[in-house]
Length: 258
Length: 258
Image (tube, helix red, strand yellow):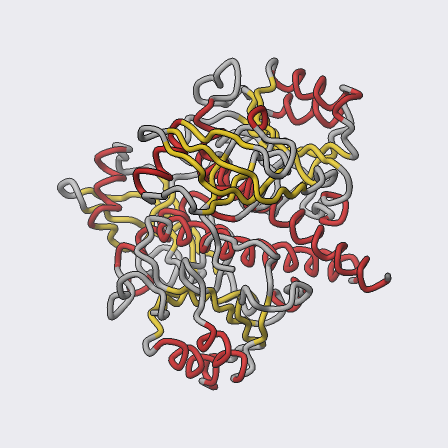
């Protein structure tokens, strides 16, 4: 089957059963109808970013931004229980969009932005809609049906310590990339891919000593990615890549044992 | 010691002994004198991108773009013998600059651009000076003294096969990222970090079947990075990250055995 065009339908508009109907509206519908010039009878794929996807057929069109769809088949991919939540020191960086995209490609469970002492500027009070939109576009590209949870951790390192301590967070491990960590304090990819793990990455310019120490005292394990400073987004993708790779390794070693 | 400002001095202008003199000219000198407003007596760090670096003192200035320097100390980092050469399918991508930067941060031995059937546009006849410049800027940021070798492999996959077969290339292994590879054909990070290895990555849109097959028939081992397509630059950084990580792991296991 050639790959169908994919659109995002928010979770709260998702139909429950095959044969039922739903409406695609807004920019997604404008693209479908205006750019792709889709017509009644055409098929498309929708996903909600929370594990659901499905094949749909257009049964009606009104105006330039409303398509009525009927469900042909629905799929559910279980919520991933292993992977990384990256707590990224805030930067005014144009590289943030890039990290959002890669987080989707490499199955990050979440991205938390936080204000470090050396952050340039301050994060917004809540995650911006435009970040979610960036993730949606990345998911269309790579076919992922789960989007990382996006949020802001307020209160500097103390806020991160609260996040780690929250019983609802269910973190298997908490880590902090620290340029002062011993150079043999390498991450263990298998641990990163086992359960939900929180990895703190400072802003460009790094963490201040007192930030790294406060985290270490609260059982965030210091990690080194090598003797040379990596850029913010390189460190983020490096960690995501290791966890992604280890998850696949463990998946294949499990299946070969079965 | 606070980190000194670093500038690039081309290998052919590099002084041989401590106490000798050299000239920094062009944009590097303009930045040093115009932006940093450096004066005679000030110290700086230079590197040549081929393993040499040194501390220098300014002993004279003429105009806005000429600084006479005396060598205070010289360092030589041996040429790395292990790591990746990525053969990247050509894209018109703005993401190329980004891959150049990450290649420096993550110790790529080289980047070869090649024209695949699905490439958009065609690479230039030879690597552009602006790519080298991008690498120089990245090396200043991360402190690397070796720059990846940049080149163009002409002649499509047949050109890549010639590169792999060239005895001067000394490749320990040759690989191709192939979306049709078995999903358990995972890269082995230790192999990627052992000797010089060539990894072929298709352009956005992937390799055509006949390209992947021609490479496989010439002993390029097909590798999978997972069931979902990764973007060009994500795949590149993913491989570089695995090799970088494995090199550090092996370095630390060697030193703990010693």
